[in-house]
Length: 166
Image (cartoon, rainbow, N blue to C red; front, side, top):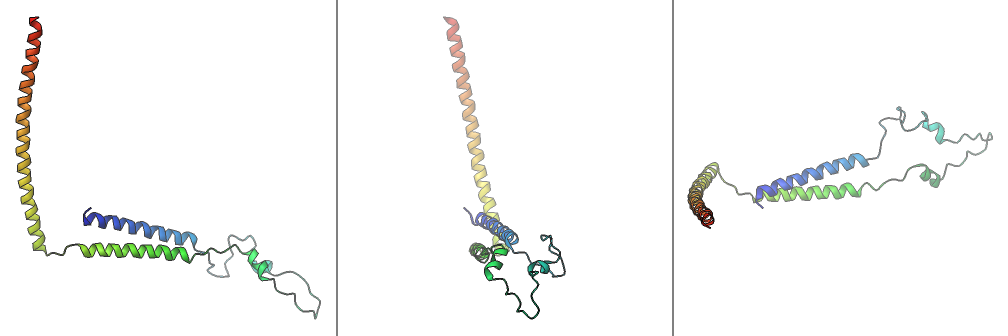
């Protein structure tokens, strides 16, 4: 596989990794409120602080009720995903793909414009030589085809004439 094809394949891989990384980050990012003054569209209660506090009336002078335990609070919130590992792995894969792309670019031969023009002229001359050779082979094949057609026609004519004599 030539270096240009490898570069194209590596660029395709980098684009796929980037799109998948960004898509995964968008999909898995936890929601965050812009401001506490906005209501939560997923919560039917417009004042969340009213639900979180128990409505227990205490005796005057009595100590306030104890705060809810961490166990009760953990049950109220959905389990958090370990989002820190997947983006790191995807970012690492993207960096490795970029490094491989850079290595392929570095492997490209450096040449001036004059060298490139000279190489193009050499390739065109080589192409002309090969084209003439192919043209000669085509003409030889056409001559051979004509000879085979003549021999085939003679053979069929002889077979037909031979059968008529019987």
